[in-house]
Amino acid sequence: MALVEKIENDVAIKSSADNFFKVLSVEAHQIPNASPENVHAVEVHEGDWVTAGAVKLWTYTIDGKPEVMKEKIEVDEANKKVTMVAVGGHILEQYRSYKLTLKAVAKPDGADLRIVFDTDVNRSGVVDKEGNPINGDRLIALMSAIVLREHRGTTIVIDAHTSMGLTRFIIDKGGQHYLYRVGYRNVIDKGVQLNKDDIESHLMMETSGHGALKENYFIDDGRPCTQESKSS
Image (cartoon, rainbow, N blue to C red; front, side):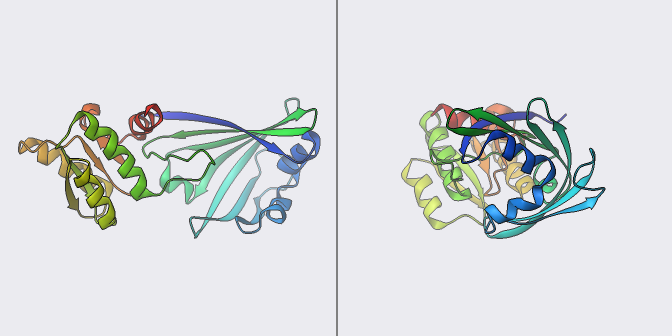
């Protein structure tokens, strides 16, 4: 059974709630005009721009990599809310399910865009206070520092895409590192094997965000990792 996490945030926008809702609901093809470096195109794949259940194809770039997503839209006019449910594309290679809800909330000086992500959480991710994502090496470093507070000397299994800087960080924090071949299952399975061989390993993690904790029974689950980082 997939574990589901909900993340919610409000972002101020320079538009009225009505105008922004109109763009979200029936004029999504205009979104690339506002952020062409991030969103390159929004096209109708099945149906049209206004019919419920139509499928749209998004082309965008994340971390320098071009990606696509197919989504079906659900529109709640009374609450100025649009929900996008992913039905194909790169996003479903990362998550078992993905739903994005955007709600335009009227304010005296404009509007807020309320963003709600509903996804499974087999991977973890963390952003800084400015909303910028922390890269894989730094995410592993953050989790390593947290784990090593309670389990000094434990072996942390990481994948071959990590840097020498991360290796030095783990050692400086009092841990042991075990560099293993790429692939989250490889990394997690190696941690399980080390523990069976009486080599204590409390964290196994790769740069994609997949990771497992010994105290969570070695389950590939991003929720405990994210909760640990938020509480520190």
